[in-house]
Amino acid sequence: MTVIEGTPVAAAAPRRRRPWYRRRGLLAGSVVAAIAAVTVVTDLPRHASRPVEVAGEASTVSRVNADVAACSYGLGESLTIWADVQARSLTPAQTRQVPGLLRDDQQACSFVDDSIYQLSTLEVPASAPGRHLSRMIGAVTMWASSDALGAIEAIQTLATSPGDAAALRSLTRYEGLLRADRAKAEAELAAAGTLLSARLPALRLARLPASGG
Image (cartoon, rainbow, N blue to C red; front, side):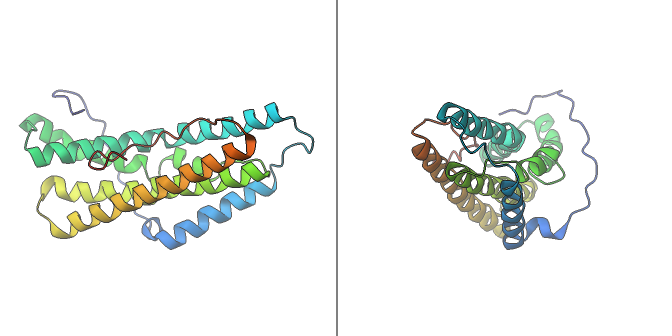
């Protein structure tokens, strides 16, 4: 459990919720459109050597990992808090810290966080492997800004009302989406690596303890 008694929690600035954050279909379309637009203007040199191409694609994956890191950490922390709530293992002092921690986790997975915006507009080479990485970025962006965000918001409700049936259903649904979008992202990354005959860096996305994935 990452909650430590006496650890100061920075107050999160109030956020004005944008309705389209939670519209999965609209978000998917905007992410794909943004990535497609960037892909057109970031073509590799026509005769780039294989080592140069591999290095470029590996750099893209590393940038994705950097951009999604705070959200991935936040999701893992939120899931740990929910497990501790279920186990009734939190001290009163730790319980008082939970709302602030969950607010920070929520913000890390929303477009309020600049890293998530940067992820959604990340430049990718306009090559065959690059097209797979473009789709990988779309799946990771969905994983963070829709799936992880939705799961954290469900946990925010459950932290104070553990028996809330609607929140429990919502958390279960978003956990399924987290697994599905992670699988999509990893499949696209594997396809890019196959085309390059190279092993690209692995995606570092928080795993769901209940399923191990």
